[in-house]
Amino acid sequence: MLDTLRKILLSPIIIGGEEFPFTLSALLFRVLLPLLLCFVLYRIILKLLLRLLRSSKIKHEIQTKIHMWVRRILRLLYAVLFISLAGRLLGAEIFYYVGLFFSFLSQPFFESGSTRISIVTLILIIPVFYVASWVARVTRGFVNRSVLEKIAIDEAKKFSISNLIRYGVMVIVVLIGLSLIGLNLSSLAVIFGVLGIGVGFGLQSMVSNFFAGIVIILTRPIKEGDRVLVANFEGTVDRIRLLSTVINTLTNESIIVPNSQIIGDKVYNYSYEDRRIIIVNIVQISYASDLEKALEVLVQIGRDNPFGIKNMKPYARVWSFADSGIELRLFTWVHEVIDKYEGLSWANLQIWRRFREQGIEIPFPQLDLHIKG
Image 1 (spheres, rainbow, N blue to C red):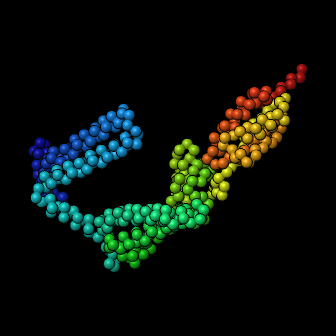
Image 2 (cartoon, one colour):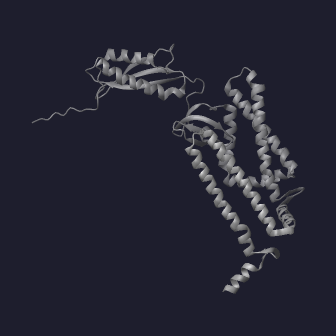
Image 3 (cartoon, rainbow, N blue to C red):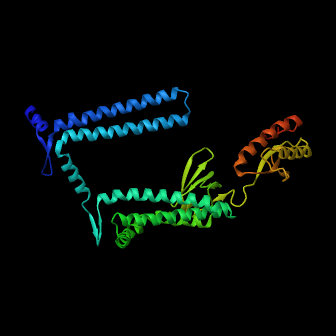
């Protein structure tokens, strides 16, 4: 048993007929074990640094940046350590194995005409899309600052134009980048034609979301900054992307809604054309209270509301005669839809205070029970 184990540990490693110039024991003790120990040390350093930063009086933003840069430096050192240990293990033959590795990555697994797709090609696609996204973002920012801000058009049209420019530039840069890395566009048409079969079976939702995103950008039923109610979630539109829209809810949660749902379902846009909104405070008073005085108090509360519009007069109405009291409603205009709940809360608190001061009773549900003997 020991002889077999010793033979396994001390014999050169052979994979696929290729004999490597090191043994399993050398791989374990000269590379894997040092890397494991350094990884444990890396985690300990980060935890100690995080604890030290939290106990300090440094601003949270600066703490985050310090932690991020220390983590990047440690990862770079870890990569350098890995390369140096691998170099020591392989010795002078490291360049041979590096070349063998890249030869494997460059081996095409798909060929169509002059197009040869290998693992290297797929890896190069990542920076192509990254560069395309960066160029599109920079171009949109330049157009916004230099052109759109100087043109007298509304914000919704600016949003649509800037997004169309962004995605148009992104498509152009992606096509140029793909041709530079050796992907022939005519061959890509064949590939996408084959992928179309997969679209028909499994990617219908992605395609519908994509075209719904284009419809949203062109028709502008919602735009970034709008207060909306979608699928029982109320919040502010944070970002509109080609496949989905990000909505930041009132509880600071990010809800990702597929664009097809926005186009196909009912959407309440509280700021579609006008960011002003009417808030409605509902209250009951007892039948024994002074109804006229209650209406006057409500109107005065509407006038005093700090979120209200001064030149838009509030009004109060007798809404219904309920079982326990008379239902009144106060209608107040507010400047911004985002102030809706603040305005409602302020008015409710004032209703409670001023009704108590004026002796106006807010009833609770009650029933009169008559017993016949």
